[in-house]
Image (cartoon, rainbow, N blue to C red):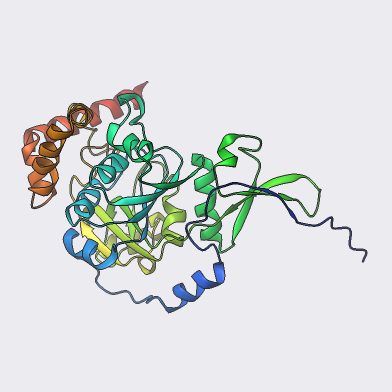
Length: 339
């Protein structure tokens, strides 16, 4: 058969760096050695972070914006004073704000990391870049999602067409290549295999089987490509409930390294069908950032002096506030269902 391929050469490269090795064979070698045993993985948040989040790791945080985001884990990472973390900023809003405030990250793949969406811009997140305290690549939400997809598929890159001809491409780590079948120009996006990821779910069992409600965003791909996975769950349920309905399992136990019972673990963000975001408290974060001295006191009160997440919640309204946020979420959900 005549070979009519037209080559696959690199036409242009972005100026950014590839922060994680995209070689799928190296990743496969790691996963081949990872235990697949169905053992009990329940642990505390403190120990999960101690055991699986290390200085200089590349970390991915599940959820999207302030929705189903594992804020208890984010606080614990800051409380344990991790340093020089690389971070996948895939629509990271309050999680980026907290990590930036704690000084734990020095490298970022950016999709969206400065804003808290309609709430405003984070000064401490913005300051990292203005003061050149981080190395970064620019990307889009789709671009980062595709990089996790490539890793989950076990391939070194996926070709896409967005950001062609933009500054986002120039300041990113993609490469323009020629399609071997059509001769068209495409952007090759390298795979990301995180060292560790934390994903918050509605329910998990003691082995790590997990399920959640609402959109998954990139969490399924992240779970399948990260080297170490911490699952934090609103509820720990009996294993039989997964056996009775196996099709509902979105993250299987053999991907998981640690399981943490984390009720209200997405506070002050939104946990779909459980509780609404604490908009009043999120506004307090943005206000406190305006005064560096006041912000230090704010961080000490809300993170460093808290022994755990429940104490943090207690300082910001406690059970009464949680009850209100649960009622607000149920009301909002009801309006959507009826609207």
